[in-house]
Length: 355
Ligand SMILES: C[S@@+](CC[C@H](N)C(=O)[O-])C[C@H]1O[C@@H](n2cnc3c(N)ncnc32)[C@H](O)[C@@H]1O
Figure 1 (cartoon, rainbow, N blue to C red):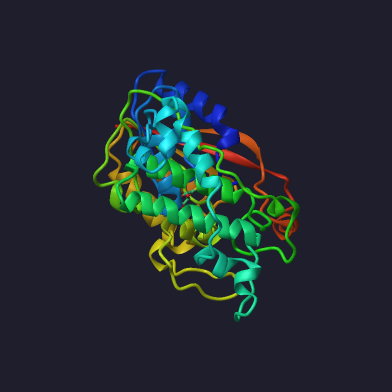
Figure 2: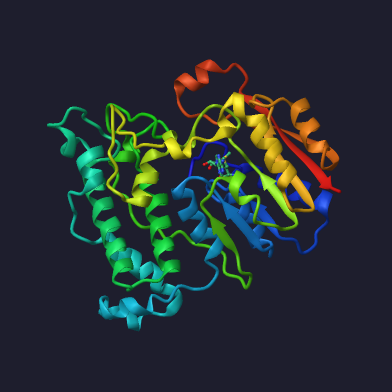
C-alpha cells in the first residue's frame, strides 16, 4: 500500500542499522506506530517475536494478519458452506475462499451508497471514490466476511486475513491521487479496473506475536520487550482523515459521514504526534515510560520536532546516537509537490541504549 511515511523502501537501512547497534541476536521487536506493518513484518521474517500497535483500526487489521497470523489458515468451519473446500489442499484454501468472495453477487451497501457516483447521484454530495462496480463488490464481500464471523464459520485469524486482503486490494482501485482526503473528478484508469481478492500473504513461523489498537501513550505502560521502534507521524497530516475510507471498510460500522469527502468522526483518533503543541510532551512521555533495552526513532529533517529536541529527550534514557539516509519524498498529489522544493529529505534514525 502506498502509505504516508511507509518504511517499505527503508527496510534494509533499518535492518542494518538496528543489527549494527543491537547485534544480530534474538530480540523482541516492538513496532508501536505500525501503519502498514512493513517494518514489523520484516523483523518477523528474520525470526523475531513482534508486538505491533496502531491507533487506526485498518492498520490493526493489517497487522493482525501480517504480524499475528503465523500458521496456515484451514477454514475448517467453512466446509459446511463451501462444499468443495474439503477437497482443496490446506495451503490452497485461502486462495479458494478469496476466489469465492470475488464471485459473489454485487450489493448496494454502505460504500456504494455513500462513496460511489451511482449511490450518491441524488444526494447532497456526489462522491466518486470507487467505480460503482467496485463499490458494490466491496459491500458484498465485506458483508459476507462479517456474516461468516457472526455465524462462527471463520475464526479470528481467518477473519483478519480476509479483511486485510479486502483492504489491500480495494486500495489499489481507489479513485484518489493517493490518499482519501479527496477523490478525483473523473475515474482514473486504475480505478476503472475491477479489484480482485489477491491474498494478503503473511510469513509462517513459530513465534507468537501480538497486535494492539491503542494510543501508544496508554499501551507503553503495559508492554515490554527488547527493541522499541518508533515511527510516528512527522507532521500535521492526520492519518484518520487521510485514510478514513479504509477505516470505514475495516470497521463497517455505518458511521455518520459528512461533507464533500464523507468524513467520519475521528475525534478519538487525533494524534498528538501530528500537533506541534503536544508532540514534545507526548514523545517525552513514551520515551520515559518505555520498558525496553533500546529505542529507535525514525524521523526526518522536516518533522515537527527538531533534531536537537529529540536528542535532548532521548539522551535522558542513556547513550544516544543518530544515523542518516537521504530518501525520496512521499508524493501525495501535485499540490504537495509544488509546495516542496527538495525532491528528497533526510531520514534520521535516532537511537538510545537505555541505562
Ligand atoms: C509514519 S506512519 C507508520 C508507517 C509504518 N512504519 C509503515 O512502514 O507502514 C505513523 C503511524 O502512526 C499511527 N499513530 C499516530 N498516532 C498514534 C498514537 N498516538 N498511537 C498509536 N499509533 C499512532 C498512525 O495511524 C500511522 O499509521
